[in-house]
Image (tube, rainbow, N blue to C red; front, side, top):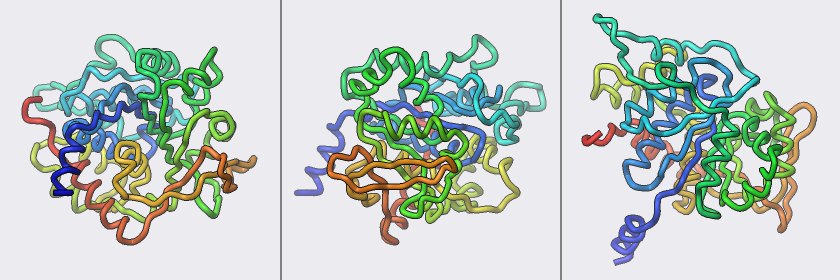
Length: 320
C-alpha cells in the first residue's frame, strides 16, 4: 500500500522546472548530466527551461543544441557567456559538432550556428525567470559561477533570484577539506558573490562526492549502442583515450536538483560557505545558514551510480 501511494505521489508531482548552467566542454560529466536531464524529463520528473553556458567557445552551444535535438527537445533555449574564463578548444565539442556522414550531411542535426545565434546567458536567465511563477525554478549550476554572479549584479537580479528560484544545486567546492576545486578557482570572485549574496538555499555537491562515484566506460560501450552514432558516447570517446571511468561530479548535482527527497545523498547541517583568495572553501555550521553540502554512504554511492547509468543511457522517447 505504501509503495503504491508513493508511486501515485510521484506520478502526480509536478515536474521540476530546471535551468542547467554548465561549462560544457571542459569535462565530459557535463554531457552525461545533460543526458540525465533529458531522461528525467522523459520520465515526467523535470522540465528543462533553458541551458546557459559558462565555457566561452563557439562549439559549446552547438553541442548542447545537437544533444537537445537528439532527445527531441531542440526548442530549449540556450544562452552563452561573453568574455568567459575558458575559451580553449575541446575535441569532445568540436568532433561531434562537425561530424558528417559520407554524403556530407551533419550526423547530429542542430539549429545553433545555422539559423540565428544563442542569447547572452544573463539576458536568457532573466527572461526565463521572469516568465516563471514565484518559487518555481530550480537551477543546477555545474560549471563556474560566472553567469549566476552576473545575474545577481544585473538590475534587480538579487530580488529576481529570491522570488523565482527555490533551490540552487551547485557542483562546487570540496567538503570538509576545503581544497581548491576547479569550478571555484576558475572564477573565484563569481563564486564568492554566489556564496555571499545568493538569496535562497544552496546545496553544494563537493568534489569528493563525484570523485567517489565513477561512471564506467563499459556503459559507454554497451548502453549507448542502440544507435550507430550517439552524441554522448561520441563525446565521451573524444574526451580521453578509452577505456576510462570518469567521476560523476555534475550528474550528482542534477540528480539532487530533480530528486532532492529520494535519499540518494545525505545532507550536512545548515551553514555558510566562504572562499579564500586561493579558492579554498570553508563551511561554518549555523542554524541560520542558507548552505548545505551533500554526503554519501557506500550504499548511497552504489544506488546513485546505478541510477545515473540508467538515466544517462536512456534512449529518447520513441515519439521523438
